[in-house]
Image 1: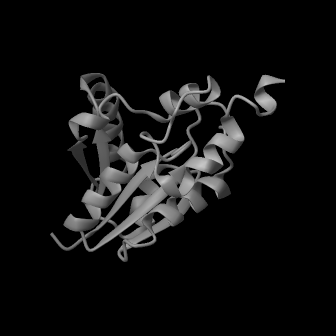
Image 2: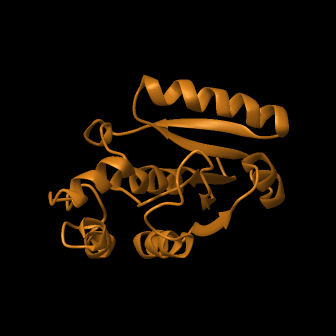
Length: 167
């Protein structure tokens, strides 16, 4: 396919589902820009933007065509600025599709050159979200099967049962 694509998200924190979409995208496109976006409908987040970027860089270090960036404006503007041809979004379920479809239509109105590509999650990741990871971790559960090994200890240190959230 030979194009630059953008994989946007809040990645708070990065999950193995996110990493799967990024890895699969890196096999299909020449360049993948993973951009940590601010989600204005969510709180500030459990991890800073810098921490999220670091997590993604550590987990994608072996993917030579993947870079990581941040942006707090409109995704359609970012795609235009970077000369990307498309956005790649992972879909877990029909409920994701409804929201993502509306976003795709809005983005296309804002940037008519931009396409949105939906990549279906692998079945074993369909239930997984950053919210699930945070809840399981805060309640003392094992998150090793939900997040990349490179960042698991960082997440547990911040969110685990014996952290500041429980005091």
